[in-house]
Image 1 (tube, rainbow, N blue to C red):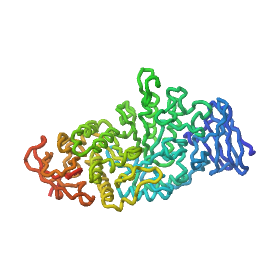
Image 2 (cartoon, rainbow, N blue to C red):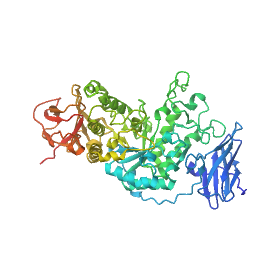
Image 3 (tube, rainbow, N blue to C red):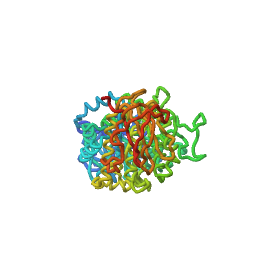
Image 4 (cartoon, helix red, strand yellow):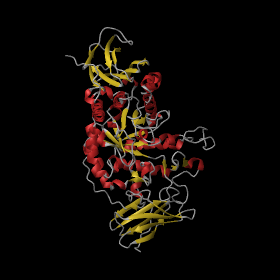
Length: 617
């Protein structure tokens, strides 16, 4: 066996530089945190000697270290941990920056990155941006199934071309942090610092991000700090004790997913996750994190019955450790990674999710509005004649749209497990018209936009995490029309300040009419700023959720004159019926809906119409 050097105390620098495997001249230094272990070794075919076991030396900080001459990048290794319970477990490296391709579970020595980035201008623009006031539309994608069989490098150009043509500003990746079970879609993470080897090496993922940045597209990552799987090779009982998970059995389990919850009150565990978040944003230039399952972190009684949870010191159900962690996460990322976005998947009414930390909030940039999504999809699944009876559910989200900065998600969760797709869950013979109306309503509603892959062209089959979207549908005029509409929606979303600048403010929205339950019609205004009246700074949105064309429909307008029809989801260009307003409507001095003037408009069935004041002259 090759001679080893004794362990040393943990060096300074980011955690991913202090622990893990780090090539060093003619060898590799290894470090791992296992404070309660009786013994730890590195095992693997390292150097040129074949398989061997290399005992590590403990330090006073709970770390174990060894330097192995001859160990080099690309070689596989594990930590053999003799736990406090006397059991011997072979463990993957929690700080591994590369992993073997599943079903293999070994860690891989990663050399220092030699990738030469070309996105300096992108990062500079991002650092100076104001995301809450700008256009933000997100294409959510599960990379392994989007084009099955392709890796990061092949996917980079295909995805950039597709998303760029549709006009989305960002992609959001379902977790590509390494995970043992592909059927978890990446949500049961075993390696918080390694991109999945299913699609290539870490340098390949850097190339992927760089290509998308070169195409003007940001990259967000779905990141999972709420829980981790119980696989013995990974984090569970890492040193023979509950180390990353809670020792308290009332807090250890995450019952919804059969996983362990992180012990966020332990400083080393919190730092492990904080370092992971920073690592992805610095080492891979990611533009933000969508933080999964925030509600499961915030509440001690989340998915737990009486007797299965313990209140905090105040006798309430708030998880104070999780609150402190999330505030530190947002503070750190915003300080160290300028322009990076954080988005909370938070499904409750927790106050101040997007409020600043210094004002008592959690500090996220955006929060998913799952109430908007649930109400919208459940109402639109009803027969057309019943939708007006549920109109209050549709308009509920517009009553609180300015309370947080929201993302409106139509995500992967809505097109699996027997739910159908956006297309198949809608009633009636012309479902494509219904999808077009739904999407145009989403793009008009205050909040940033998110759409899962395949829904941009009306995917018929539920999402299959192996087979992926049915791309051949794009040859059908009806499906192609949905994609063309999404392209135009994104174009308008980028071009017209009224459709994005006022997203996080109550002043960016104003009702025209929300009371016509007979016809299931909604009318509202979007403004870029209070009092804005210029073309593109003011947009009227008229929504007909009924199954009937409505002619000579009178509605009040805030300004007299001609209003240009800039979008009609029933247009022939989208394979629609062609029913519309011939390009514009004209107001008359007839008061209506509390406005001094009004116009009669044509509202095609299941359609949305956008109008803006015509330019002078």
